[in-house]
Structures are given as structure tokens and as C-alpha cells.
Length: 447
Ligand code: ADP
Figure (cartoon, rainbow, N blue to C red):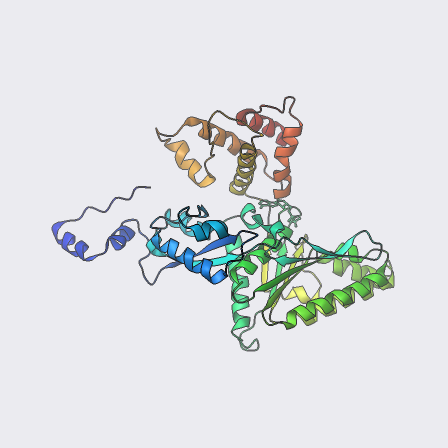
């Protein structure tokens, strides 16, 4: 984007001379002034799986690289500089995060307004450790070392009304900070329980996992060891309740051991937390075996105990919006409603799907590379198409918008499946061009 300096009179000229160029530009585009208003932007640096470089060394190199980089900041990847042998050998990718709020409000974020916070991490490739429940089929618990390869990119793939993800991240970060600084909970009260509720398929479970992954990355210098334990509430109510009881005890013993380590951070995720309350009520009314109440109660007691530990974050999801009768979530500080995607979110979800099909060459097009405009820039482009811009992507974007309008009421999960269903319904799936594909997608969505 081009920035023009404001026209000034002679007197103003003198005053303007005193200003630094950054200040002058900053004022002309109505941006906050520095240095007080510097915006903290996270720069995430993922190391190669084989890298043995020291985190501090990579951090210093990246900071140096960013100092030299006099560009604007926007969410997205930054190429690893090819002239820096050390970074080329050790770094898989660099990504700028958290600028979207600013970019939306102010359209552009320039390097002198930014204070980068560099987070260097290496993904764990270990995969989930599983604990089987008594019948040997359903696993009751999964655990991952964070940041895990499985959750890489999940945060970015989840699209919500503006600010939801950032709000969650900030809440959780504040809770961790308060704990770390030893704020007295009797004087300032807060807890580390997150409850995401809303209709099924809106990405709540994924958001919990992605949040844990993000926090593991952002807090890696304070907590070098992070783990996520996912409790499958449903599988606890298999027919082997007594076995489940033992498993709960075993699991919490393990968690307790982890929690005792001052430098480890543990996330416990309980999906569909309402099923615990339902199982307890059913057991009380006699419609479920009484063993089940023992398991549920054991779990609730353990969770209650755990919530006072400073380095545990409890993440829960629920498909019902009504109050949930469970002691450890009814006072959750971080409660967020996660609703069905808005038009903008639907457009962005479908756009990312189409872009992925183009990348993998399932959709083919003469134009290379074909990049569809974002929702935010679409309106501008429709009203005043630039002469330099080819109409192809714009026409496709209009089709995509139509599809997004038709998909009202679909969940994020359904939207992410739609391109697959569309492809499966094509009579000639080879050699499929995007425009034809979108037409079929609209028909599939209508059906
Ligand atoms: P829930 O726990 O609410 O039932 P899930 O986390 O199981 O939902 O979501 C299933 C999948 O649906 C996610 O992995 C994701 O691919 C997709 N999805 C749901 N909501 C969204 C969204 N808002 N943005 C992008 N993808 C979404």
C-alpha cells in the first residue's frame, strides 16, 4: 500500500521537519504514536525436527533479522532469510501472529509501531499416548506433549467473528500471569477454567486444543514442559465402570506428578462436560448402574482438587448453553459462546478449502498462482476493481460469496466437509476448474 504524506503549509512544514518520518507517516494514516503505543506482535518460530540449536541462539538471530526488516507487519508466514546459514539450517518456518485486530482497524501496521515477541519452539512428533478403558476398545484418555505436530496450524484454521480467539488467548495468558506472580486469590479472584459452549460442530474441541498449543508456545520460556490430557467423558461410562474408576485414579496420579514440577504446564480437556452431570443424575435416579456414579464422582473430586494447582488449565466444552450442574465449571472465569459461523467466517472457511484444493492441484486453473481475495478486501474490490487486477479471482470470489450465503446455518464442521462432498459428486472429477467446482458446491449446499 502506498502512503502519501499530508500536504502542509510553511509553518506546518517547519514543525513537520522536527518530526521523524515514522511519526509523520504514522499521523498521516491515523495510527498510534510511538514509543508508548507499541503493539506487541508475536513472531512464532518453528524449528526443524532435527534441529539441536539452542532456543536462545535462534531467538537472538530472529530478533536481529526483524530489526533489519523494515516492512509492514501482517499475519502470515515470513520467508527464512536464505543468506542466514544458521537460520536456514535450523528453522522450518517463521510466522507473524496477532496483527489482525490492528490490521483491520488501521489497515496497516508498520515496523516501527511493532514490538515483536519472538517464540521459538519445536513440535513434538510423539503422537498421542493412549490409555485404554476396560473393554480394550475405547481409549479413556489421550495425552500429548505440547506443542504437538497434530495441532500444528489448527489455531489458524479456526475462523470466528473477530476477536474471539484473541480474547480467549488474552484471558488465559492473564490467568497464567496472575498465578505466576503469586497474586493472592482471596484479594483478586480468578481461576483457570475455560468453558466453551455452543452448538455441535462449531469447533469448540478444536479451539481448546489449539488454545493449549498456543499457550504452550507463548509460555515456553516459563513452562518448558507442557502436556495436554484429553478425557473422553463418554468412554468412561462403558460397561466396565470399576475399571474406569481405576483409570481415573491412575490418570490423576500421573497428572498430579506432573503438576508438582514447577516448570510444567498441564492442560486437562473434558469434552461434552454436561455428560458427567447427566450420568450422575441418571445414576441417582437409578437408571444407570451405581458404579457409574463412583467414576463420575471420582473424576469431579479430582478435578476440584486439581483446579487449585497453579500450573493447570482446565478446558471444557459443552453442547448445551444452559447452566451445567458441575462444581468445577459453574464458576468458570472464561466462558465463551461459540456460535455457528457468520457470513464472513463461512466465506473464509470455504476460501481456505478452495485455496487448499488449488494448492494440491485438485482444482486446476490457467492462472498461477490463483489467490482469492479475503472477505475484508472483497467489498472494496467489487466496488472499485483495480485495472491491474485480473477479473478471474474476483468472479470466483463472488461465486464463493454466493455459496457462503447459501450455507447459512451450516456448522464449521459441515462447511469443511462440503468441498469433499462436492468433489465426490462430480461426474468428471479430473481436470476440474474452480468456477465449475464452485457451481457444483452451491448445488450441493442447496441440497
Ligand atoms: P465441536 O467440538 O464444537 O463439536 P469440533 O472441534 O469437533 O467441534 O469441530 C470439528 C471440525 O469442524 C474442526 O476440526 C474444524 O475443521 C471444523 N470447524 C468447526 N468450526 C470451525 C470454524 N469456526 N472455523 C473453521 N473450522 C471449523
